[in-house]
Amino acid sequence: MRNAFMNTVMDACQTRDDIFIVTGDAGLGVFDEFKDTYPDKFLNLGVAEQNMIGFSAGLSLTGFKVYVYNIIPFVLYRCYEQVRNDICYQKLPVTLVGIGSGITYAPGGMTHYSVEDIGIAQTLPNLTVISPIDPVEAKLAAQYSLEANEPVYIRLAKRGEPAIHDRDKFDITLPQVVKEGADVAILFHGSISVEVMKAYEELIRGEIYPLLVSIPMLQPLQKESLLDILKKMKHVICVEEHFENCGLGNIMRKVSLESHSTWKLKTMGIPYQFIHEIKNTESMREHFGISSSDIVRTVKDIAGGVNERR
Image 1 (cartoon, rainbow, N blue to C red):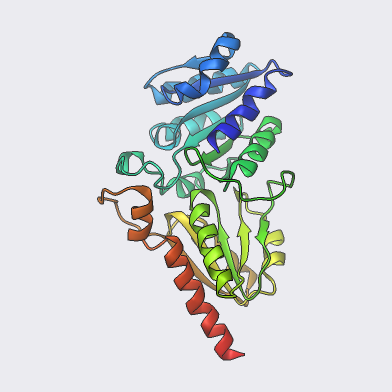
Image 2 (cartoon, rainbow, N blue to C red; image 1 turned 60 degrees about the horizontal axis):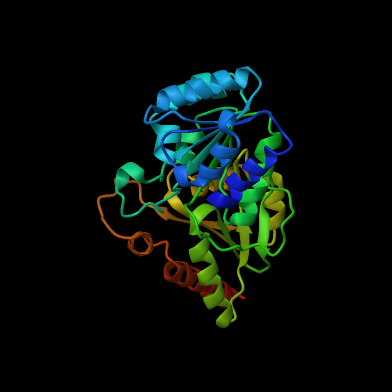
């Protein structure tokens, strides 16, 4: 996803002279060729995150389309005040590119995890939030950001994520049906998509066909479109690699209440607590109950209940 996103942005420099990339001592290998080709469009401002955001806001005010690239804790957490005041308050078209969504930096530890960033982003008016599930969505998110007139935050995993969509053009602002299904819908975003697709393959072997819906744009959420997709569902499961108290699951609780939905909501995410465990990403997902096997078990339990009531 990371390469799909940044390659789209860097390729745009062939026809646009307003793009500028700022990094905070991260992703240097990604930009080796770019900084040689466009030395006047790239700066590494080092480990100085507040300065990085303020500098980018200033560049934007002079007419540049600025992309700020860093690991999520250093593009949104450490410099929250500057993102709030310098970028979002002024509604500047700066794109924050955050790498390492969820626990994809395991076993790097809590300092490098991004399990509360969606909750933080919800406190920032004017900030669009996109959490792609695969390289296709990452490329479309890049294309969206290139034309955006508002601040955009893109949360990406690391690299090597497989393509999930079988088409490459659709509206990235809308929820997307990945697999058709009935009765039970699984909503997901970001890096947990790998586990969701593994679970789906196992479920269909048992002739259980849940509806899979990707939610690439979390803020603003296109509620009417999503509610239309879910109108025939009996159960909705939100799966995410994020604190369950302030991510998509919590957003959907509000949607469910406000819309008086008839479907029942189940959330699967990381418990609201600091993470002290040291494991790789797959083992962490198992530990927190969001692995493919956990998804399969949850869907089977719900699907069994649906069948019993028929």
